[in-house]
Image (tube, rainbow, N blue to C red; front, side, top):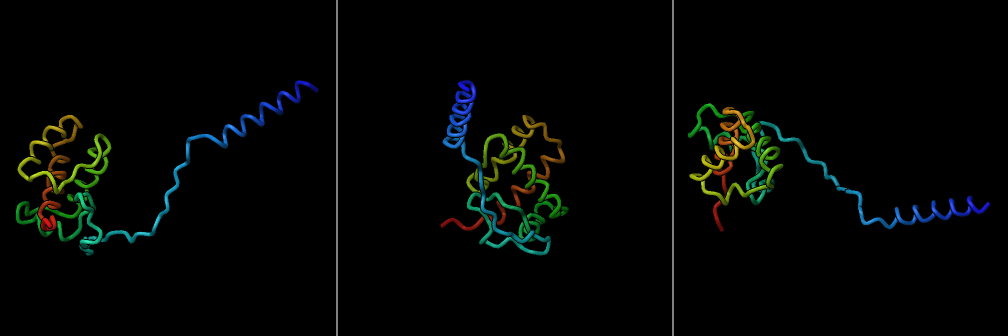
Length: 139
């Protein structure tokens, strides 16, 4: 009988400890977002303040003067690399804040460390330059 009481007490202590744990479960409220279609331009309302957002036709049009063969698929690949590989390692850096002239060196240096292929670095470059080309005017 004494062992049963001790076991019950131990179980109760574990339950109380678990309920008062400092570890919180992550809950996120999700708001439905319509998927971006290639025809839908990215409006100023959905552009992030640091320039990290999925590209749209506005970015494709803006970058085609510099890279005539640029497509939404290539820019989307660059976005995927930036939001996965780049941000996954050191967090988001403001695409807007860094001057365009510095990006090729950054992409070469970081691309080597991240073991990006030449094609991946090219997609990343086109994505960043497309975002820079549609950068809002400074206020």
